[in-house]
Length: 168
Image 1 (cartoon, one colour):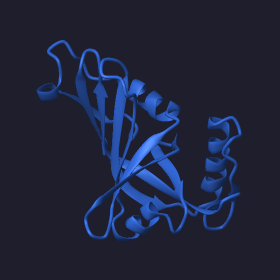
Image 2 (cartoon, rainbow, N blue to C red; image 1 turned 90 degrees about the vertical axis):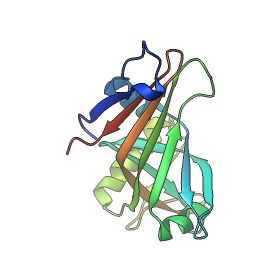
Image 3 (tube, one colour; image 1 turned 90 degrees about the horizontal axis):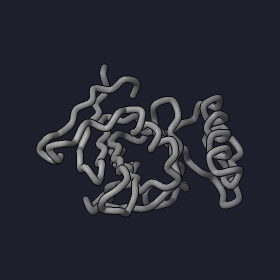
Image 4 (cartoon, rainbow, N blue to C red; image 1 turned 45 degrees about the horizontal axis):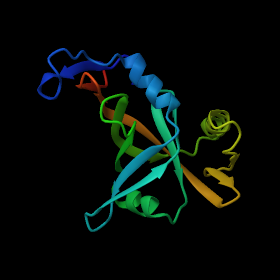
C-alpha cells in the first residue's frame, strides 16, 4: 500500500486530532512483534489467535501449520483482520489491517521472507525454505500474504481514527 489515500474519520476522533501519518503507521507495522489474526470458521464463528508477522513490500506475511484452525478457516474464507498495538488506553497506536490471505509459493519471495523473519527477531525465528513454504523444528509452515484492502489506525491520548485505502 504505497502512498495510500489517507483520511481522518472525525466521527471517531477528538476535535484536535489529526490523521496519523502513513510513515508512523508503516513503522508500527514493521516494528510490531505480535499481531492478532481473526478468521472465520465454516460455521460462521470467529477465531482469534496471536501470531508473528512480517511487513514487507507493502503486505503482511504470516505462517500457520496446515492443520491449525486458522489454516482450516482460510480454506473456506480467505478474509482476515490482523491487529497490533498497545493495551494502554491513553497512549500508543493500534493498527488494524483488512485483506485476503493468499498462499505464497514463490521461492525468491520465500527466501526474502525467511531472511526478514530471522532479522526481525534476532535469529529466534529460523525457517528453511521449501517449494511450498517453510519448514522448521515444529514441521511444515504455510506462508500467507495479506495485501491490505483497508488499514485503520487508532491513535490514543488525542484520540483519532485514520483510514488508509489503496490509491489504485
